[in-house]
Amino acid sequence: DVGRPVTARWAPPTIGTTLEGKSDANWQVARSTSGFVFEKTHAAISWGMKKQQSIALSTFEAETMAASLACCEAVWLRNLFEELGFPPAGPTVLYLDNSAAIDLAHDPVHHASAKHIKRRELFIRELVADNVIKPIYVKTADNTADIFTKPLDRKVFQKHRDKLLGITE
Image (cartoon, rainbow, N blue to C red; front, side, top):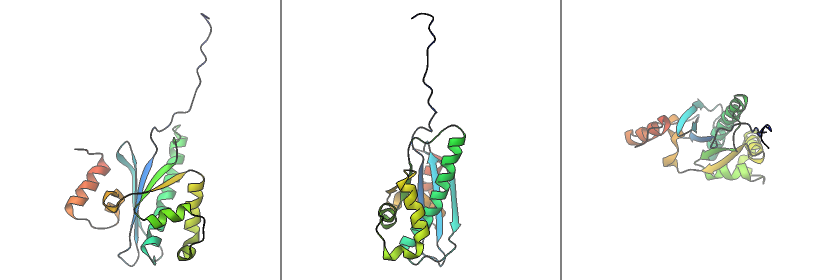
C-alpha cells in the first residue's frame, strides 16, 4: 500500500496522572479553618485556605466543610485543564485525614450527625458518584494541607513546605 495516506487516530491529550488534592481543617478555634492544596507532577499548582462561615460542631463537620471547599477547587481545575485541551485522565483524588468524612462521601445512608450539613454532603457525594472526585484516607502527618490550617512545629512545616515546592531529597 505505498502512496496510501496513513490515517492516524486522534485522541485528546490527558494531563497524565490524575490530579491530586489534599484537604484539612483546624477545629481548635471558634470558626474552623479550611485548607487545601492540589498537586501535579509532585508540586503544588493550586492552594488556599478560608475561615469557615459557620461554626462546626465536630471535627467531622469541619473536615466535611473543608472537603467541600476543596471539591469546588477540584471542579474548577478540571474545567481549566479541559479548556486547555488536557482533560483529566480519571477522577481527582482528594486525600482527607478524617475517615468519617470519607465514609459520608460514599455512603448514601442518612447520618443523624450530618443532617445539618446536608447540602455539602450531597455535593461531595454527587461528585463521588459521577467519578469526578475519589476521596482517600491519608495520615494527618502526611497531609500537606495541614500547613494552611494551623501553626506547625519547624520540622513538620519544613517537610510540608518542601513537598509543596516539589523539593525531594
